Length: 104
Image (cartoon, rainbow, N blue to C red; front, side, top):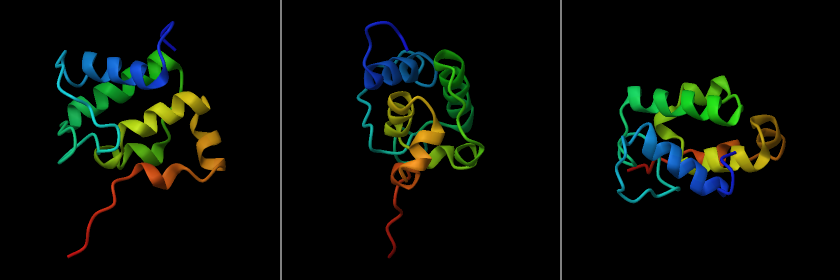
């Protein structure tokens, strides 16, 4: 991880550098990164995730790649804190990072 940075600060810095192209707009860690959340397009999402994997040497699971627009920045923070997806999955955390669609 970036020296001296907490996981939320490290994820925020990487999001700003890659997907948000330097923007200083607020980042809500509990909203999805795509669509109605941060509103990132598919290219920006891929750029961020590839940079995340490279920077922190943590592989994002294939199951996440198919639902990138729904995942929240908090997922990436927790990946850093757990040091990988297997730890999160073993604790049953994976489902909590997806935005719940309201019915009706």
